Structures are given as structure tokens and as C-alpha cells.
Length: 257
Ligand code: NDP
Ligand code: 8X3
Picture (cartoon, rainbow, N blue to C red):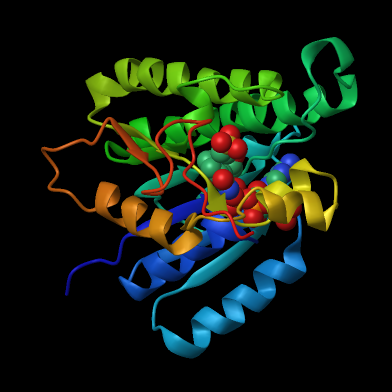
């Protein structure tokens, strides 16, 4: 019988991470799901366990802690789990202030989560992958990592960092046969905008007004594709956009008057 493959998905308690967990469970992969909100992960696991036969483990972590990656690696080691795939998905935008009115705490949350958190987890898991001699890392970038837009400043900078890091990680891990990919979505309707607008529902809702954004399952399907191409193929970079969005700022909205 073919060995089931195992994916680690960070930020699996909501949105794209949650949808990816469901997509990979449906495809028969074992899962290690991480996030800060363990109760959300528990209800997702209950939903997955009811429907699918694979194994799901939960690991509570705040990726901002410098030892977040090492703790996860130690847990994998204790449980003798060899990860085939790491999806670096945990991330957020906070605030839309222009640079001259920026809020240092917002900047720190984004830099600490999106850049440093991804580094801490990747450092530890890529070392496991180089030791075991196989693995694949998919970083969730963004259209914000390809372009800049008004009020996007630090969030865009963090996603540009992921764009650059993905290329650099691919070079460092080339000798070990470890694949490194980026999936970079445009507008996806999740809790993302609610977090960005600090809980303001009406501002968050406006982001998706008048057009059909991506949903989290669309991105999960793209992740599934990137993870399941033949072993000699690597998708370096997959930009996925709503049909109604041509760039970070060009969105075709239907107006209701
Ligand atoms: P959600 O807000 O729905 O999900 C974000 C996830 O990240 C949650 O599971 C959250 O879990 C986790 N997370 C946030 N901070 C931390 C932390 N410090 N430690 C661990 N986990 C954390 O948004 P999305 O699903 O949309 O976002 C997922 C990724 O996709 C992000 O990297 C985002 O930048 C990216 N993206 C989103 C787009 C969009 O339009 N929605 C477009 C392009 C990229 P918890 O709070 O439980 O810790
Ligand atoms: C999220 C998409 O356009 O808000 O990364 O930056 S956008």
C-alpha cells in the first residue's frame, strides 16, 4: 500500500489554510494543522475526521515566537513524522494607513508574522527535509508581493519579501532536491479584510463589493495542483486572480444604482 503523504499547513484555523486542509484531506493526505486558535483547529479536525480516513494532528503555535519552528520540529521528531510538504500560509495585513501615518505596532505584527514567522518555521522544517532527503515548501505570497498599492506599504513589503525568499530558498535547497514554490493570490474573500480593518465589518465587506472574488477553495485547488505535479516538475510561482481583477488596483465592479 502506498504510504500516505503528510502536509504541514500553518494558519489552518481560517480561510485559505482551512480550505487547503479540507482539500488535502479529501486527497488522502495526513495533516499537521497549526495556528494560535486551537479551538478553531479542533472543530476543523472534527469536521475532517467525520468525512475522511487520513490522520490529522493539531499543533498550537504563534509563528512570531523565535522557537515556533524548533518546537514544531521537535514534536515531529518525537512523533516520528516525516513531512512531505510545508505550506507557509499563516499571515495577515493590519491597517491601511499611508506611510507617513503608519502605526508601528501594525508594522511589527505584519513583519513578525509574515516574514519572521515564515523564516522560523522554514528554518526548522527545511532542515528536517534536507536530512530526510525529500520535501516541498509552498509559500503563500500575494499580488501584493508583485505590485504595490495605496496604503499597502508594509504588507506589500512583507509579501515582496516572500517573493524574494521563495527564490532564495529554492536556490539553497536545490542540492537536496527540495522543491520550493510560491502561490500568489489576488483578492480572496476570507477573514483577511476583517483583520486588516481591525474588525470593521462594513469596511471589510466593501473590499469585495460588486465583483466575484476568489474563495478560499479556489486557492486550495491551486495548492493541490502545485503539490501534486510529477516529482521532476516544480511550479515556481503561480499567480491566481479573480477574473474581475487585472492588477492589485484594477477591479471591474458592477455598480448598483
Ligand atoms: P484569514 O484571516 O482567514 O487566515 C489567516 C490565518 O493565519 C489564520 O488561520 C490565523 O490563525 C493565521 N495566523 C495569523 N497570525 C498568526 C500567527 N502569529 N501565528 C500563527 N498563525 C497565525 O486570511 P487568509 O486565509 O486570507 O490568509 C492566509 C494567507 O493568505 C496570508 O498569508 C495572507 O497574507 C495570504 N493572502 C490572502 C489574500 C486574501 O485576499 N485573502 C490574498 C493573497 C494572499 P490564528 O489567528 O488562529 O493564529
Ligand atoms: C491580499 C490581497 O490585494 O489585499 O494579499 O493585497 S491584497
